[in-house]
Length: 335
Image (cartoon, rainbow, N blue to C red; front, side):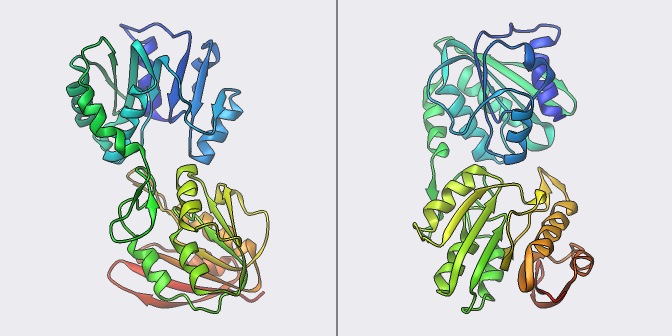
């Protein structure tokens, strides 16, 4: 279980607990056994595998963050500054007068700093420290500094990357710039791609948008992305191209079809931790989903040992470009 969630729940079960509310909204929802006894809890979770965990627990989930007001709003934000502040603003806008905002973060993502930031807006705050995390809550008493929430509110909205026409939003991968690894892959994409193409971990759609722009012979392009917020940005960035289809999907679970070409800049982090197994799982899925003679275009950090996975998956590969940080690999399925 997420240690931040365990710490958050101490707000309701610890030495000086607040009462379980009659209604609550959970932003960044993750399941906990105690929620089975909560009378009315609605969760919003944009990450696919976490949303599935919430659903399996039999809890109420919404695809879009709802409007309305709740007596308690829980927040498990992501790790970026803008996403955390956006989460505070979203919670504030959905809190009833006299309601309680409860948040929790790991210490490694700056929990203490964000507690101080929220305290500036709410004046009074109570905190619990455990599991290398910090949970804190504040009661809306009519004295909150609404100017600070007004400063954070724009962070909840999509925005354009400076110097581009691409739309992103806080909390998604590479939300402030074009990822250099993805740019390397695009710089080496041929203009003769065709047939069925898949973009695994498509993010806000940079690889797909550039592939469609360069290669008119592409018949279909499926974008697979686990973050619903990024996928919505991708819909905007692909400008309604009829060849594109968008799938809220966890790539590690495999793909529903097969492809002539797969594009991939696989993730390898969960929070601050390196997760090489994520990239390996993406490559395994790609190898299983390529048609015979199909081609994988893969960009990754140089130090990540993905070549053995390519070989195990029956792919022949060559490294076609690299710099101090990234390597670009083109692999083909011969067998």
